[in-house]
Each structure stands twice: as structure tokens, then as C-alpha cells.
Length: 400
Image (cartoon, rainbow, N blue to C red):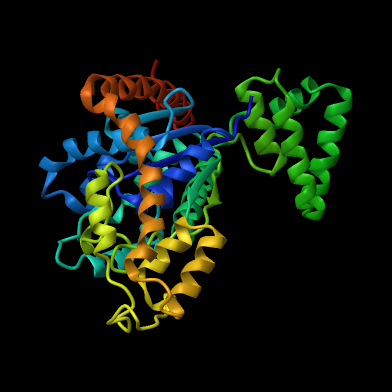
């Protein structure tokens, strides 16, 4: 049966901070309740820009996975795995590289942007140029239908869609495709088969997107179709051949700019972070020493919340009533900066407490984390091998 499947990954950068939680992990925790989710550690991607310091990657991997689990990512609901432990990613990347025009890679917007941002590194490597294709292989190997991304990553998903489309166009013309597709239509039954044909005609002759969506919904409801027939019917619907690689769509996530302690975006490179499992004492100290509106030199000086980094935390953590209290108290000098910071301290500590609690058992017994990842890698490999088998067969590389 056709399944809505989510694929998302993170590069291993060590222990995570609140920016990662509000920007990615909180969304993962929600998605795992709604979709079949695959979340992976993108350790090969880390090598595209940090190939000269591989010694830090392994420890960063385990630290990051513990943070995922601490944040509420549930291995009973989502599959967690490490990219390099599923070698099918690399094999699909290699096979797709045979059909990928060089110009497609060079026009990915982040290619030149990242080269400029990381100008201190030599990024004139194929690994860096080809990382959008590896990212595409990560998605396509699981036939993921949705990929949660921010606006800046949408071009990567469109690139992946183009690769899937090109592959299906080149290799999806199986002998007797139309006859097999018509047989599959008959297997839907007379009533559903007739409806499928009507919707297909409306889409192909009139470009009716609603008809396309209705036909896809019809196919999703069918539980007695073989995977081969299902793929043929999707391909036949859109006028192509057998759909070997499914085209993913971007699942846009709301931009979540978690502020750092200094008002800039929270980032390790700015040294302005609060760690996901940081001890309460350290969190309290960091927030109490945050800079505030520079106009408030003395306690009696009124301030402007919009010019204060602490206000950005209130926008994330405080309710409307608390924000009104802060605005009134700050602009009238009715409250001091330490008073203003206290609700933020309490809210961050309350958010962190269950995370530290969940992390404790994994910190005390690291084999638990390794077992979760081993199980996830095994499950991911089974699905990846299935896709790769179909890809190799389509490309004439099936020698068994």
C-alpha cells in the first residue's frame, strides 16, 4: 500500500542546543505521530565540508542521537539510523551520478553560497559539488513522499524531483508497459477502474490537477494492489512509464529562529547557545547574565523590549499575560532586568527537565543507544535494498 513517508536527517555536530530543538526536533516529535518517519545521522554529509577532521564525527554521532531521544524522538514510532551504515545510499548516489547533468549541480543555490561562507576551506571537491545528489539519493532510496525543510532547502527537493523524473523517463519504459497498466486498471474492479480512467483522461487532456489528486487518493485507498501494479498506475496516470523512483514533495516547516544569548541566531559559532541537556545551574547563570537594552544603565531607566535579547526569549517561551507584564514593566522601569529574566529561566528549566530525565538512562547505558541505531539501520537497509533492486533491474544491472 502507498504510504506517506517522511525522511529527514541532521549532520553530526555534537551536542545540540535549543536552536536545534525549536528548529527541527520539536517538529520531528510531532511528525512521528502522523507519518512513517525515517530520521538519520548524515555522517557522510559531514565529510563534504569537514573531510579534514573526521576524528570528531563518531563521538558527535552518539551525542546527537542521545539528544534526539532526550527531545522525545521515539524509536518505537520512528526509524533512527546512520547514513554510512546503509551503503545502498552510496550505490544509488553512484548510479544517479551517471545520469545527472553537471549543470544541474552547479546551479543549486547553496553551492556558491556555502563556498563563500566557508571560504577558509578548500571546497573544490566532487563531494561538495555532489552533495545535493547524495541528499537526493538519501530521499529516493526510501521512496520518501515528504521531506520537512525550510524555504532555503526547497531547491534541493526540486532538484531531487528532477532527478527522479529523469530516471523514470530514461528507465521506466518497461516492455509492454501500457498493456500491464491496463491489466492493473482492470484489477481495480469495474467501478473504480472506470473512475480511474475518467480522472486520468481529465488530467491528461485538460490538465485538471484536482482530477490528478483524486486519482492518487483513489490509488492510496487500494490495499490489494501489488507494488508493481501500484507504480505502473501512478506512472500511467501522469503519462509516463513505470514510476520506479517516487517524486518527493517539500513539507515546509515554519521558520523558527531561536535567538541566542546575545540576540543573534543561536549557533555554536557565535558561542551564544544553551545546550539541550545543560544543567540548570548553568542555564540560570547564562540567562541572568544576558545583555539587555543598553539604554537601561540604571534600574530606574525605562527600556524598549524590542532592543533587548531577553524579549526574543519571551516571544518563544512566555504567554500573552507575561509579555504584557514585561512590556509594561520594562517601558515604565517598573521591573528590573533580573525580574524580567526570571520567567524565561523558569520556562527553559521546565522544558529541559524531562529531556535530562530521558537522557539519563542512555548516558548511563550507551549500549541502549547503539541497539536502537542497530535496529534502525537494519530496518532502513531492508527498505533501501528493495528500492536499489528495482533501480538496478531498470538499468539492466540485474545479473542474478
